Amino acid sequence: MSSQAPKTRNRILQAALDLLIANQGKGVRMSDIAKRAGVSRQALYLHFQTRADLLVAATFYLDQQKNIEARLQPSRSANNGIERLDAYVFAWGNYIPEIYSIAKALMAMADSDEEAAKAWGERMQDMYEGCEAAVNALHEDNQLSPDYTQQTATDILWMLLSVRNWEHLVMDCRWTQKKYLATIKTMARRILIKT
Amino acid sequence: MSSQAPKTRNRILQAALDLLIANQGKGVRMSDIAKRAGVSRQALYLHFQTRADLLVAATFYLDQQKNIEARLQPSRSANNGIERLDAYVFAWGNYIPEIYSIAKALMAMADSDEEAAKAWGERMQDMYEGCEAAVNALHEDNQLSPDYTQQTATDILWMLLSVRNWEHLVMDCRWTQKKYLATIKTMARRILIKT
DNA sequence: CCTTTCGCTTGACACAGTGTCAATTGACAA
DNA sequence: TTGTCAATTGACACTGTGTCAAGCGAAAGG
Image (cartoon, rainbow over all chains, first blue to last red; front, side, top):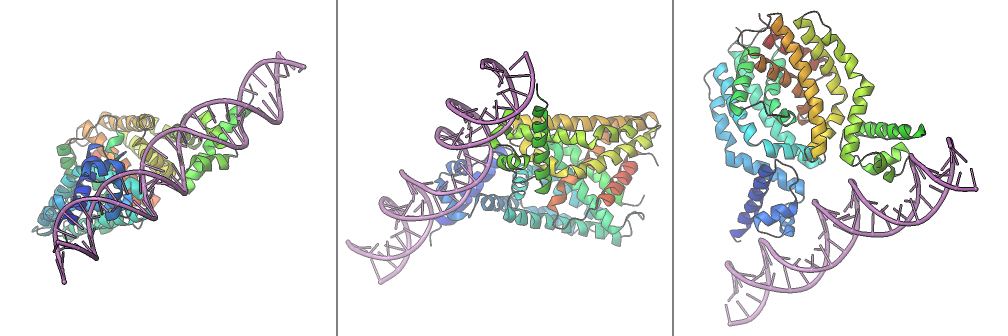
């Protein structure tokens, strides 16, 4: 068993990520990835079933690199609901823009590929559960605005985290990352928390 | 000049819309559209430059059919800012889910096609300008929450209108259209309007 | 030292889908 | 009758994904 094998696999994933980011997730061919990774096109199919398979793997590889677990830790270990909410928004609010290009590519693929859709859905589910936990904490603190049910609150937080996806539709980009973070944080507090 | 020409063109557009909606915007081939329209595949290229061109045209054809202008009228002619905002949210909030499948297809194309991206951007711009008008009306009524600048308010309304795009990522659809409308209306009021 | 194994390469090919071209048909109008 | 024009037919080029068979080189194990 050689130690080369995983190296090549990771080189491929890294090449895929590089290209996806550089090209904003569009028009990245298998041959491009192979070229960048310094392997033959056919080698990609030795490591991954399909293109979708490769790109899904690349996304999880990125998650790992970007240490999303560690980023979410502050939210999990926060002392109260508000802190937890802020930490949650901070973690995802920073993360989403970083992985945006790749997420976009994966979403596009999820539209046409069953397997990619499934993997992506699971990843979203994780995000959703963390969100639920943050809102639950507010509930336990009795800080939730009375005219919002727990479910509605969760839905709204979902909305807050969703906006990034539409950015590219606006002709001139109106959002800086800092403004984006500040806005969703304020919104989340305003909507969810008692005044 | 025969009257057949526009008829065929419209039959093609209608066929494209039918298929896009039926297949949720994915996997619709030129040959499928041609078959449904009862014309040859090559005929499509007599009326439209490319696939992207056809689908963009189909979207505007849909806008026309769905009478978006009439729907937005109540917002334009509202007596005060709040009515205007509500009418605006109502109009787009109902419209977006109706055209969702096609919008999705077009967005996907906008990612890879320059021309489609341009057409889509212009359409979004229209939406944006109506949004600005609604928020301006609130401003004139002096009903805008003091700690939000006009620009921020507009951005937020953008967010409100954006959520639909992510729905398909959630495994089980948590949003009914009614709930969607009620939520964004309440959100818009809460965020924008003085209490 | 020879042999097997394994990761990867090379080159060829099937297949689907878009877009193009040239020649032809068929109807309607001058 | 003739010209025009929409649309048809069949063929083809091109791109990108995925597959297949044969071969190669290096490292491991006898």
